[in-house]
Length: 144
Image (cartoon, rainbow, N blue to C red; front, side, top):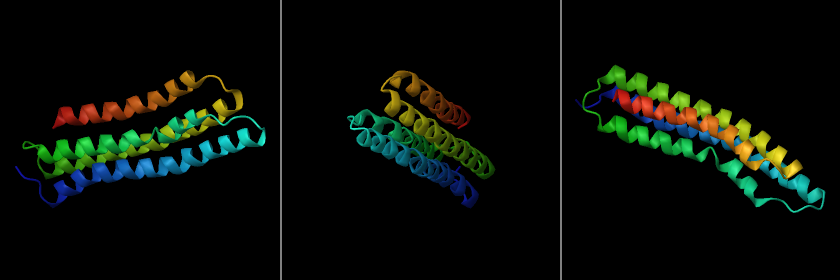
């Protein structure tokens, strides 16, 4: 069954909300990484380039939104209300996690720039947020 108007809102919403969360996330983690580099420069220490990892962690959430957009648009068993609820619900979840993930990334960038230690530990915390996004993707695909 092809999606109607409400269905397309849900299908587009999953990507839009995921991308919005990632955009808000980079507004949080990006300046924190730049600030961490600035602190290093002011202290005449080399600025670790690896901090860019913390700024870029939110990018995966856009990919998850796109995967779900494609999955929902290919579904032949869902009806309009199901598309709407699944799409908006999953998009809201992924977008919110992107914002949460960026807050963790911002703190991780600050901590690593100050100490030069603990990169793997900080990345594990950011990865926990990433796992929640992956769960949202997998569980949504299971429903389609």
